[in-house]
Amino acid sequence: MIVCAGRTEQFSFAKPIGVGLIESAYNLSRIILENRPKEILFVGSCGSYGEKKLLDTFYSSTASQVEHAFVNGDAYTPIENKILNNVSHETIVNSSNYITCSKDVSEKFLAAGIDVENMEFYSVLWAAREAGITANGFFVVTNYCHENAREEYAANLKTATEIIYDRYKKELKAHE
Image (cartoon, rainbow, N blue to C red):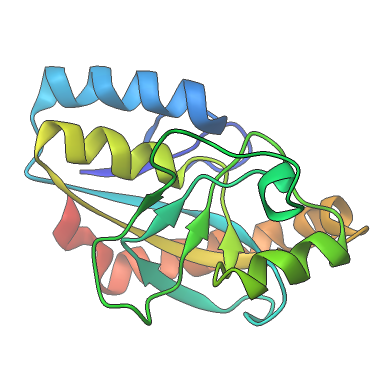
């Protein structure tokens, strides 16, 4: 089954699950209970903390849920904040209900070994793991996580969407 966030990132071949950590966890859990898919592929955009370039594409099955306060040393968490499913060199996708727009914070995420951010992916991996289902994500980098993140995202979203549709035609159909 192929899923996406929805709203500004909708695809005819994917079920929308909602934006952010809460909507996506709830809605995907409900979809899993109703449909019992064998696997889940999330498709969408992400912001780069600096090493991935604009419009780069990649797959990942590894995510974290780390907030700015954590990388700044201003907070701790008693809960698990990483889901590591694959090799150690895989791109780690961070999820938060907030989009990073600080180059300084982006550098701290990179120093922590986290490469990019997407608001929903941690929830996708969490819900799938709880249901015993394999999950992965396919991402296109739409922006860097700096002061112009919002504008860059808007400027590159159409091209990123076209890249995802093109990849769907070539290889993602197998995940339906």
